[in-house]
Structure formats: structure tokens, C-alpha cells
Amino acid sequence: MPKLTIEGIGEFEVSEGTRLVNALEDLGGEPLHRCGGYARCTTCQVEFLHGEPEEMTEAEKTKLESQKNLGKFRLSCQCTVDHDMHVKVLMPFSESGLDDPGKRPEDHITP
Ligand code: FES
Image (cartoon, rainbow, N blue to C red):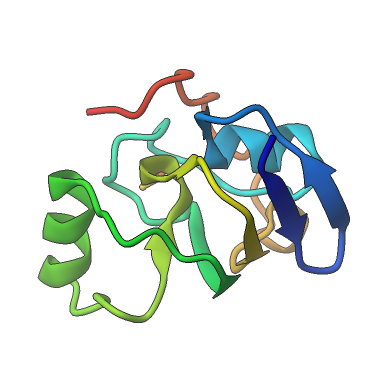
């Protein structure tokens, strides 16, 4: 199983193919996911310290390009854990001042 390291939280073994945003949610990484995982809100943003996926969904690319954020961060709702990776959650729920992180994204990548 691939190893997911969450900056400031710890190292975990994660089932291959797990949607990154949900792995972070389940392991205490506290990602926001305000649009429910549809590449619309960018609140699920992460920085890859190691193991950034080379592939990117069209939805993620379009969103990041439209906001001139391509190369600045990645959307954890558009990534799956299929190899070892080390990420930092950039907008943790507990620092957001929001009442809830957003509807839980589906298990598979959407849209
Ligand atoms: S862009 Fe909204 S949850 Fe990922």
C-alpha cells in the first residue's frame, strides 16, 4: 500500500486508489472540500512536498489555469493516492472559521 505523509500529522498506509481528499479527511488532515469534490472551489488545495502526481484531470487543469494557480498548488479532490506522497493541507478546516468543511466527496474522482 502507498504511504501518505501528511505534514504535521503523520505517516499512514493508504489503500491504493483512494481519493486524496478523502484520505486526508479520514486521517485528520482536515481538508476543506466546500464544493464536494467537483474542482470548483479550490478549498481542498494541497502542496506536494514529495510525490506530486504527473497527471492532472481536465477539470483541475481548467480550474487552476482559469485562476492563474497552475503550478502553485494541487486540488486534493482531483488526485488519487497511487504511490508514496507527502502533502501539506493549505486550508485546514480548523483554521477556516467555517462551520463545516463541505459535503464529503464521493469515493471516485468527480466531475
Ligand atoms: S475543488 Fe472543491 S473540493 Fe476540490
